[in-house]
Amino acid sequence: MTSFNPRVTSMQPSATLAMSAKAKELKRAGHPVISLSAGEPDFQTPAPAAEAGVQAIREGFTKYTQNQGMPRLREAICRKLRRNNGLDYAPGQILCSNGAKQSVALAVSVLASEGDEVLIPAPYWVSYPQMARAAGATPVEMQTFVDTNYRITAAMLEAAITERTRVLMHCSPSNPTGSVYTREELNAVAAVLRRHPQVQVVSDEIYEHVIYDAEHYAFASLPGMQEQTVTVNGFSKCYAMTGWRLGYMAGPQDVVKQAAKLQGHFTSAPSSISQCAGIAALEMDMEYVQSMVVAFRERRDYVLEQFSKIDGVVCPKPEGAFYVFPQVSTYYGRKPPSGRTINDSQDLCFYLLEEHFVALVPGQAFGGPDGIRLSYAASMENLIEGMERIRRALDLLA
Ligand code: PMP
Ligand code: GLU
Image (tube, rainbow, N blue to C red):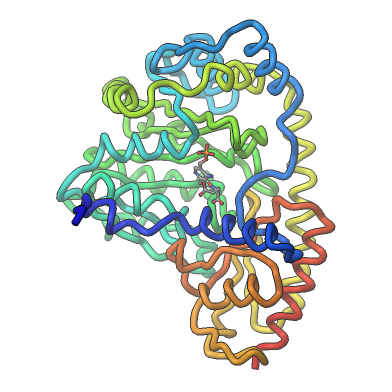
């Protein structure tokens, strides 16, 4: 019998990817599925980035690049960090990877190991606890609720830190809740961390530009935090480049060096073609990104308005990313006419998908069992139909 690494066997598959795959499968079988599960912009990659990729192919720029990423891309990332975030990094402190997912995984892997704790505010993005486990570390959840708009407080953090804590995961704007930390809240969190220099923050800022009524502050820009933070960012969300697989980390030289070593053995640098597209994305006018954000805001407002009309659903207003995370637990324990019992968020999502053909992701996969996640990175037409199906489906639960 084949035996497997228990760190892998104890992992759950990614629920976001699993729900998207299930939705695609039902669609292929001819069902009229509306997919509001994947966090993937429905916009095309902006033309300057796409053109740069095509040009790279035409010019035969199709070979391995430096493991850390092309110097030109890393220089462009340094300029971006200075321009948008007021941060100074040298190109040697940047590591380009095959998506921000890889960047987060590398950062966690080099910072945490057996016996260490990784603090994760919940609801969290599905992959964080699994990445901690893969590194041999223990994920420790800090549960947040609607009352603090899903944000941890400095007091919660202070109480959660032990001598084994090595990493704090931070994600603002947040996937799955869309919540955004204010500058005051971040300063209070940073003040706690300054007293615990053994804790490194892995700050996932991939939704930086998808923000509505709030301002984004890079965690590393808080007083004293640059040396204690690994910033992760990428091109998937803000530049609609999910399929190009390009992300990066910026951090203290020694952290980046260790992560680069791991990458050098596991995957090497991301595609040379994607790196050329990434340079163009960073250098283009932000108008395209801003127009996506205008569309996302309109969709968010529509979805919130619809949820506000459904009895028993509480849906905080997200200030960023493209998700809403409504609380739906009042529907647990009920039954639709088909007779299945809806005991939790997973049952509810399967009911919505299999009987009403609308795909969402169960909150329990994000450590928020009372909620479900809806991605409004979808056309208005699909959102109108999707929300109507959700309303009807919940209405049928008795
Ligand atoms: N972090 C968060 C919070 C995300 O939502 C995603 C989306 N998949 C990622 C990281 C990874 O993005 P990618 O690997 O496509 O750059
Ligand atoms: N990050 C996106 C999401 O949360 C894409 C899927 C994934 O990579 O997990 O839906």
